[in-house]
Each structure stands twice: as C-alpha cells, then as structure tokens.
Length: 637
Image (cartoon, rainbow, N blue to C red; front, side, top):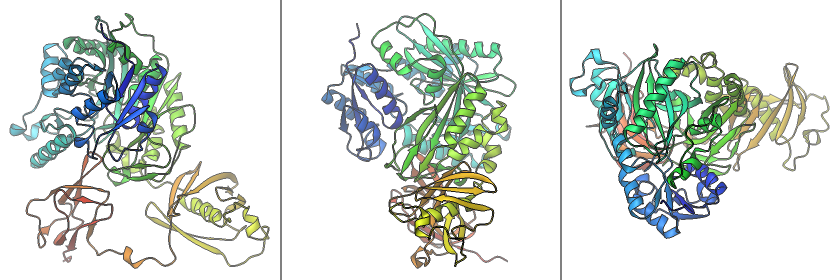
C-alpha cells in the first residue's frame, strides 16, 4: 500500500509551485521549495515551509538537475515530489529516480511518460489505438506540395522548438533553430515535421485516471489563441463543438490513457480542422498550465486529486457534472508589438481586481529575470455563460494595475472583446490576422500625460494642488510645461491650473487626479516608480507608462547610426557564419541569436550595408542596451 504523504517538495518554480503549495496547505501537508540563485527570494520560496538552494542560475544547472532535486527532498524530509509542468515533469528517468529514492511520485507511471515522451513514438502508439493522426513529413524529401510545414520538438512542448516553414529555402535554417532551442529547453534536439493546418483549432481533453481502472474525461478546452505556438487564452468547455465531435474526442482521450495504463492527471491534445476533423497532436503526461478552467467548470481541485491518486485512492466511477463556462488569460511580461519581446526588471505593482482567480508567482516589488518564462500570472473567470465569463475577465484585466514592465494586458483585453472571439470563431491564426490592430497605441496618452503633470505639481506632503497654486485662482500666468514619452511618442503638456482645452480639473493629488474630459468625469490613478524614471497612469481610458523627458538630454544617450543594441538581457548563442567586420549584409538578414527566457531571438540587419563593428561573441552574456554590432548603410542610388 502506498504510504500517506506528509511533506511535499515541488520540483518547480513560479506560479505553479505557489498553486500546488496552496492545495498542499489545505490538505495539511508540509511544503518544500527548491530555488535557483535568482529565485532566492521568489514568491514560491516565500510561500513554502522550507526551501533548498540549487546553486546556479540557468535551468540546466538548477531545476533540470534531477539529482539535486531528489537530494533536496531527502535532506528536507519530504516524502513526495510534485513536478508541476515543464522542467522535469515529463522526464521518465527522473520519475524512476524519485521512486527509487523511496519518495512518492505525483505523476503517471514512468512507463507511461516514456511512451508519450517522444511525440513521434506517441503517434505510432496512438495510430495502433485507432486515434486519428496527421501523416508525418520527412524534411529531407519535402516538396513545395508539402508546405506549409510545422516543425516540432519531439521531447517538448510549450511552443519551444517549433517553427512554421512556408518556403523550402528556409527549411534548413528552421530545422537548425528548432533543434537548438529544443536542446536548450529539453536536452533533446530531435525535431519532426508534419503538415501545418491553417486556421485549425487547438482542442484538448483533460483526463484523470486512478490505479483501479477508472479514467475520467473531464470535458474539453479550447486553446486556439496562441502566440509563437504558446497558448494565450484558454477556455472550457471548447465552444461550438457538435456533440458527436465532443464525444469522439472524449473517447479518443480515454483510449489514449488506457493504451499506456495511465494514472494521474494528463491532457490529450487535438488539432481540429475547419471542417471538423480531429487529429491527435500529443499527450501531456502532467498538469497543464490551463488546468484552472477545468477546475472551475467541474468544481474540482486537480492537484488534490493527483495527490489522492498517488496515495492509492480510487476515483468515483463518474466525474461531477460541469457547470457554466470558464476562461483563462495568461499575463506575460512581453511586448506583443515588438515581436513578443520578453521584458525584464522590477514589477512595481500587480493588482488585479474583480471576482476572478489569479494564479501568480509574483507580487509587487519582485524582479522578473532573464532565465525563465515571462508569464506573470494566469487570470481566470467563471460564470454561468461564456459571454458572462469573457466579459468578467476582460473587465478585471482592464482594471488591473500593472506597473514597471510592458505586458500583454491590452492585447488580452482587446482579444477578449474582439468580435471574432465573442462569436467563438476560434483558430490558431487569430493573431496572424489581428495582431497589428490589437497592438495599436492606446488612445488618450495626452490626457494621461496631463494627469501625470498635474500630480507631479502637488507637493510631496500630498497637500491638495490648490494649496500649491494659490487656491485655484482663475488668473492667467505662464503655463507650466512637462514632457513625457509613451510607446515611442513624445507628449508635451502645457497647462494652467484651471485652463485646459476640453478638460476641467476637478481635483488633483499626488496619486489621484480627477478631470472632466469633454463633459465626462474621469479619475486617473498616478504612481511613480521609486527612482522617478517612470510614471504610471491608470484610468478607464487605458493604462499608460510615461517616461519624463529631461530638459537637457544626456548626450551619452545618442548612439551611432546603424547600431544594433541588445533588446533584452540574454546570452549570445550564435553568430552568423562568416560574420566579421567588413562583411556585407542585407536588410533583414539574421546576424546574431540571443537566448532569453528560454526562447531564441534573432537580431536582424537594419539595412543593407557593411558591418563595421562586431562586439558580440558566442556564449557572451549581454545586458539590455549593450552594443552588439554596427551596420553602415550603403548609399541609396
């Protein structure tokens, strides 16, 4: 008989570790965290009863070191290990080592993980079980008729090691990039190719199985809204599926679980074509990031059920009936308008209001570093209908105060309020069609700048602005001037205390300015970061990050034309073959590859010309803004 669990180590970090600890506490279990050096003061460490250091920073030296994780569990007196998702969660050897060390593994049998670990082997198994599949394509013999192709890492997920290829000339480079990224993320560079289905839907089925022969199919989830093949918005149940298709997906998922004698929580993922044909993609032998939407709809705690199944408990023969609809949005520290560029730095404020569930690994004041995924939080709304859940989630995100980092918050709000999403017209090409419109600069930055300037004029002791400006006397004097930049646009604000075109100042304090804008009363919440380098203005009109412009710019801020600066902190993982000062380059040519937050980012030539300087070398760690290279543009004829 499996012994009862009393102390649980989570072999992970961030929001999933915090979320698992929450359930463990509810069940009366002691909790143990592990952490890398950058995570020494992370929320998951502060949340646990005990924590063990994994020396180093990179995942390969810390969270991917199964031997160190097991040693930490034994040292701290834990008797069970939960892997969360990512890192070692789908590593069969690690699962075996956990069990061989006398610890309880909170996951499926190692044999099931092994069977599904390679997507290529998993598809062979599913074909034998009668589950429909897309036929693989051999990249070595691919022809134009096979395009577009989707390259996928055989050992991983989460969008890493994936590339869409629409031109055979780009296939070799895409294979190399996908394999390199797969090695970095999963330690396995195997990549395979299959047809890329345009405008397909990503639909998955949550399964839960015990050791007594019971397998639950806990409904469907739609995860079609994706960027870089990583999910952004998920919902349960998947809307608009015919009952026959839903039932066939459930049956295929149960068949997949039974084919490998599955136990615990897992997910079977399908691609559904525009004409309603489902194809098996993969089986994730772990908890999914989007599991909260299923928990909300079924009223379950999947982590609690994982723990009980690991202790040998039997599930009821049938799951509870689902109720309502749930939608989850992933809040990322990234700039969607700049090729989804990840952001690093201090998260000064993270405050999300409303009746929503927030799973996060950060609080205000925490630092988002370069080594890990840039997801800040998952925000989940549950309501009787889909329309109500979508509306509640959009409202909560729109009212959130998120300061210090550029995020995808506005993109999420715009996506949830988009007519296509509202009509459940879902497919994986959503952002290919709508990204430009969804990332347009938020309006009314000028009004936000006015509010910031008025708040700045209030004395530090938070006295009303009238006290500083002589009781709001309506006497014209020289206007005050402030300048700010927001999203690359500069705003110059000239103002009198009571005289602004179309705007009437009702009140102004250092953190709250109330204006009447075109006859409508609006409140602007104003906050400065600790060193006064940025001002954050939040209102019903949107959120704005403003950078005060100094009256006398520092000449050192100027850079040589054609300079390529590091867009983020990271590691130079590759320099283009043969690239050296004097090389001729063409506009858009990849020159360097940076790795940050487990993704590769290409640094492209800004114009055709000559490379006059190259300061980057493979393996070099660079800070944000570091000069990497200089391209002298060739004269135009």
